[in-house]
Length: 235
Image (cartoon, rainbow, N blue to C red):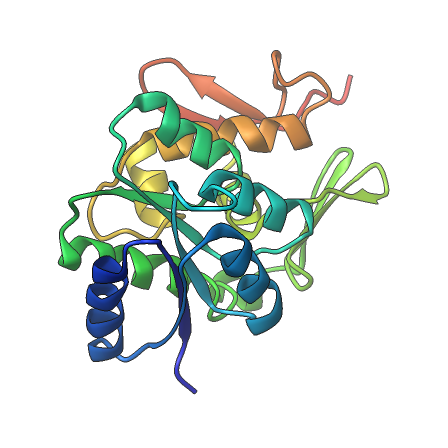
């Protein structure tokens, strides 16, 4: 069955170009031209990925993304924005977007990002079947069969990307991993995307995982190098 991409953009010319290239690349497409309709279709049509413009009539892309995440949707969302401001890009990631591209964009790059974000939803990573089904780290349990993380007996509400991030770090305890490597291994990009996506994902993960995100004890930073996973002391 073909994967379906929902395109939400109020510029018909852009929708037509995206639809043509996505269909040529083997995807089925859905389309909406405003925020409320895009939100409705994301809820009802269960697409495999959403290409979501920021500037939309009725409800902007940030609000659509935030609403879907608040409702528990884990659909990959790639924001499309004409804005260059740093705050807009980070704001989209902090509201749950998986990635973004800036207009005018290269169609080759956009299709590569669609493919990368789609790939992570197709099947569990092979290590989950080969290794043990659980990783236990003091008050954390990473259940690889169910793809969840439990802390003190309660499941933590993680997005799929956040789960994959903590899983990759936890499987390499103590090893400092650069943002470039995390982008390659967790985001599965064959090229290096915007590394701010890694920093935002780590910050969001800490807010859910750590008792005190300002002083993390699990996901630690090696300044100027990258991130590493450290199990808290048992003392």
